[in-house]
Length: 388
Image (cartoon, helix red, strand yellow):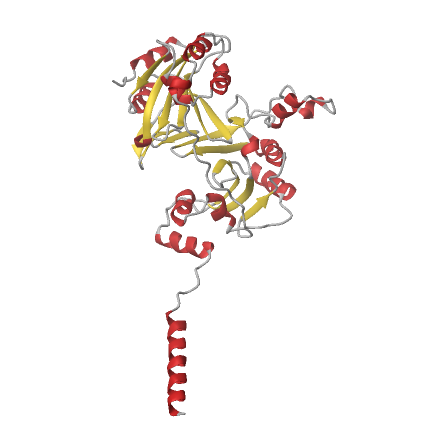
């Protein structure tokens, strides 16, 4: 009997010990983010998400009801939100990819677009016209806020009202893809835009403020087609027959080539490879010579374009930057693998790619429609340091 009591006592002690030694339940994502912000108050949300092993959209969603509102993002809603955002007036548009960020402040032009359903009433459109009009947002084309949309890759949308770095309330619309990565952000930059922002949020507020997001895993980069399988003669002939630089995308699809691979296989005289440090030379010389340039930077959901002169360039925070009042550019140039001077359809561009072979950004010279590029731009491209 005594032995039984001893055994029961030992078992009870063991159970208590196991309970005490059991690990605490994992804290919520919001709690983990709160701890991280306390430890690193200047850490950007994108970097915080990476440190916590989640997407930026998932991290943002932890603040639903606390300055963050989930917006409708099914079907055509992202396009309609962007159309409504034209009424915000002065805004700051921010687009990024893995190694670059472009930020432009201004007012989007309210231009009527051919084929826009709002202008054509109930006129029936064929499938191609319908697909094209879905990627029109009625004004972000050629003005200060110059955007090219691929709405099919937009998945989540939020309105965010939170204190900014200066302590003042910051209001923004933030959009993410199916992987929870940032596609585009639009910040209100005028007092008059506050009431418009509030009305927009009320109009597009999602009925269910669900914080759980069914984000997808990152898509693996497809293997590059072997060079030996490319019909090189036909590809180079198609390149030489280009009459417009925009035909290049169709040629890539036709021959199933990656962009950097196409540059590598280009006809003689059409492409020259640059050293990665050519990026700094391009920006510094464009600023020094007061040369107007076009900068294209984007991701799978959107490309943002800046056209104009730049002034202040400098290295800071692991990036090479343009820091002008209404235009900022931040490029992690240590991540660049290659640069290229490219001639297509009578136009010269300069393109840079990262270590994964992904295009980071592209430059053109600003030109009038139907006119050749300025000689100063061609001279700048010719002066950049070539690779061996």
